[in-house]
Image 1: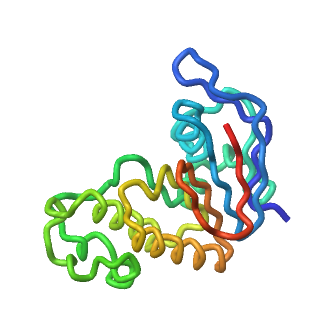
Image 2: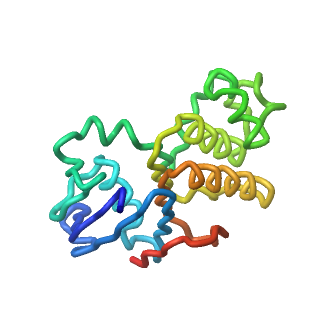
Length: 188
């Protein structure tokens, strides 16, 4: 059984058709990596899957039910990581994310430091920890490894493996390799 199915998706950015007729299906535990040059529509596809950008055509199904018939329900199942980290600079990491999620991303020693003092990589790790802590079944991740060092990428991959083991889905745009077995790749 497929948990998420996209059929004949088409998306415009402004007046330009970015892609058309795009489709894929993911079973529980599925990971789909979006690859392609800058401007090919990876971020636009993620935004459309999240319901942030309207589809020009096509259908998106969760458990064989159209997500457009229950937009609020669909939004509630998404863990979103965009280009912006959505980190609140005045709050500490401990005020934004549970302690276990901070530890998973190696941020426990920064737990009580205002987030505005974190480096770009530390803010990205905090944003990843926020997605993981939300416990949503569908992660939509736009360039999740941007700004991460090797150790942080490994922490991220550990979270991905755990999410997959729980039956969660991940769709991620990336220019860098994400070393997880049995991932599907969609080239745009």
